[in-house]
Image (cartoon, rainbow, N blue to C red; front, side):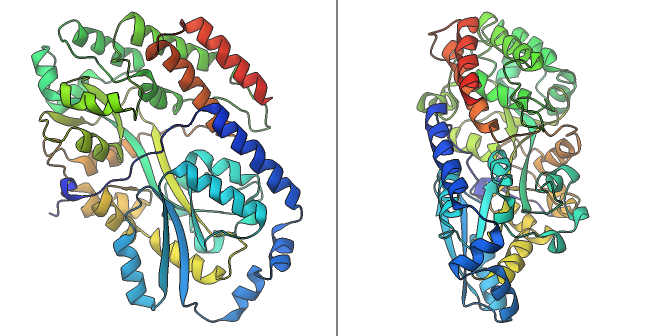
Length: 449
């Protein structure tokens, strides 16, 4: 039985949050730029002298292909392997954050030039580019629907049935916890016992947290923004309807979750009051700052990196409310590229089950293809740092538990940042009470209408 040692792997870090005003300004500028271009993708390709028809009919393999990713995808060794297989050199542009990659791609689509042959797109902003799906190649002939989990495949299909992205990783969520702190507080610490104790809804999770903080000097979780990501990813239609109506300010389900979370965080003192990705948040891993964390697969490496030298972390095959996905990306092929067919072949190869398994072994990027999820390599993978937890099996189980994938409209990212800011004004900064902070959130949402 093969085992993956995650302690030797480099893992992908999620995108730092930007403030609403910054993202909003960039989005407005980019929309105007894209709208000003006019025309369809075919016309744009002809105007730029690099349309897909010429490339598709050339029949010649290019000397090189350009690929833009962000953070860590685990592709370095795969690129070397592909170069040896085909003789095609890969020019890899690794952008530091997803937000910077997003902005650069928007600019390239607006200008009609400048994009790489293959562009990685993150799940939360894929929907923005769906508005301009004709600027991406249709990959449906090379993307069999049964290769991926249903919801992973369907998120990349536009209204005309065109597939604009090959699915890379996903972020099924489990619960990471400090077994030593659980034991000191008199709570079950064995991962199976913890999973049983957490079997239920979010109130079950908060109830166990209330029991924990009553017997411990540590907080139950780092801050409201981490927990919010788990809660909102279980709401089927959170912020916008499919016909474009913004409902974030009137959706009672969103407001109820906001109130429930802040009551647990502030009134019941379950939160350490830390903003995720901040310096204080990172430091808290070294000083027993909190006992639990929602952890999609990519979060395992974040925890290990910050908690280096700290013993006691484990992973439970459980998640409040059943299941949820946080994160994941796609590989797209912009129509403006000069090597369309070769780019399709590389993007398809990178996202085949065999390559997804290799990316998982390299950095912990959890596969989205059915065959990879069922493979021996994934099912037998363990993580020494997390008390040899069977993380492959756990995360595969968590992927199967996902029943809801939220509808994410063009304003999803903007609205989600705004509500996380609202949570942090209460939980982290202490400058507002829940209602006054909610009113500020409503004003920000109104400005988007």
